Image (cartoon, rainbow, N blue to C red; front, top):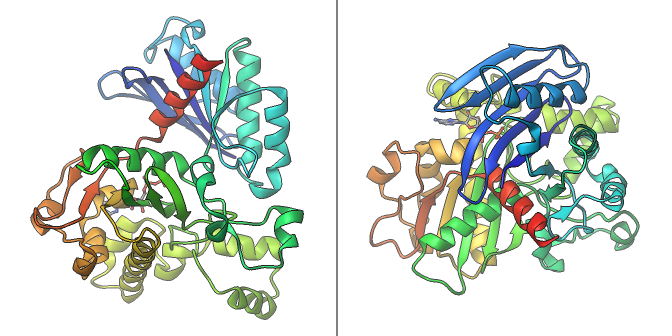
Length: 397
Ligand code: ADP
């Protein structure tokens, strides 16, 4: 089955063409600067790449450009869009309504629209992507795969905020969590790599521009660091992560900030960027940490925050069988992995420094042989989860 995977954002969209049955990717790419001018980067074949400047006033022209490059010219990988059998859409917020990936119907779109207040930046772009695909590829099944679904198994005492209860009943204010496809993929791979098959206790650290940690018991998420929105939890590229509520109201008062300004400050100007004052990109901050005190502080804070969450989730799971690192930082930064794991011997986590520092791109175990719990580096594959869920939903419908 050939699945077209679409991840539509507000001014960009990522795509991939994949056969999930044989886990083969035919092409992938990104459209950027939609609504401004338009750039399409298309990867296909064995490491071939095309970069085109195409006018993309709206998402429709962007998706048209992608379908055209997939079927014509130098970047062609299929004869016709009829070869695409289904479309899988990444959708940010499924609220409490969606407990699994679903086939798109009018009711599904209405429900994702109803959830817009919970994800005002992401859900509208996701809906737009669905509607354009329905228009450009009529009759093809569309499936939505939600970032939140994997965390719908959290118990109430983990997802509730200790606010007046009617905030939950009136506005659905609770913890939802994100990066669900990545946490699912990585924890599932880790379960396969463990000798133990029952009562598996896994902590997954997804560390990229956005970062979150999840506690996974027997394949089910029981707690995760992000909340109602992705700003909660770990310190990230530009998001603050956890900040005392008192500090937020005090800052609003002192600086005279309104809701939009404080939201922007905490989502776009904080985190690694806010502390280092240099960049939201950890690689750049790591490169300057020996000479720039604020870069050093940013690195120390990133690692310390991850370590605190790992420790608390080992407690939530009553122990640990595997700690997993994934995402750009988790997969590539031996230093962050080392700082996080230092001193966790008492929890049964002992990092092997030689294995940790070896540069490899495959899934691997970087714990010492005598470590009672494993430490895995597992490259994430969110697109595969979307394609595979799409295949399963379409096959069962
Ligand atoms: P996104 O969340 O946008 O998918 P990625 O998962 O690609 O992001 O992660 C991006 C982050 O990974 C950036 O902070 C980048 O600096 C960091 N990163 C990538 N490679 C390395 C590396 N070799 N060492 C340290 N950090 C890295």
